[in-house]
Amino acid sequence: MKKIFIFIAFGALLTLLSGCATTPSVSYGSAEQVETITTEFGSTDLQMIAEKMVNSLLATPILQSGKRPVIYVHRVKNKTDEHIDTKSITDKVKVTLLKSGRVRFSAVSEVNEEMIKQLEYQTSSGIVDPNTAKTFGHQVGSDYFLYGEITSIKKRAGRVQDVYFKMTMNLVNVESGLIEWADEKEIRKQAKKPLLGP
Image (cartoon, rainbow, N blue to C red):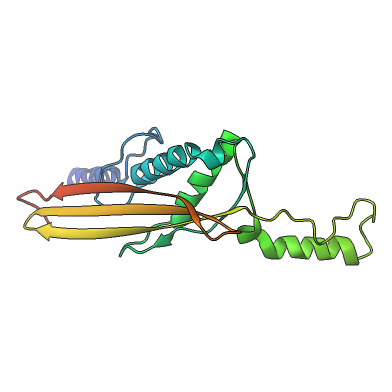
């Protein structure tokens, strides 16, 4: 009987210890903390790219004039071979620029269908007070069009992996079609596999 009790207690202890060993330890860190877990595109890369593009764009004469131009933003094209949430890049650039107070952004690229539905509802449903209903033909046209792309080159030699990312953005004058601003940010990351392990 004593042996059975010891066996059950030992089994319970092993189960408890194995449960503790497989449960991840989670903790909060700073969003600005440098992330170097892998060579894949990560949060630090996104932050460096956004900071470079915003600072460069804010330094252009276009945004120094005090006129607050209206910009239409197109999602950044991902030309790498890995999944990158490029909307996060454009959102970061857009939010930071908006906070500067020097630009305005057209929401057409994001919610055009919803705006049209809302205008149709207000003008033709008969439910909305005509004195407060918004009508077609009053949206502000964009002065500039912002677009970009991200590319990468990956190399591997033995245990060393090298990844190079390049982000390019352009600001085009909608009326003239001229590129008024362009800049790029380059990032290189390297990883070396240990001698032992997978």
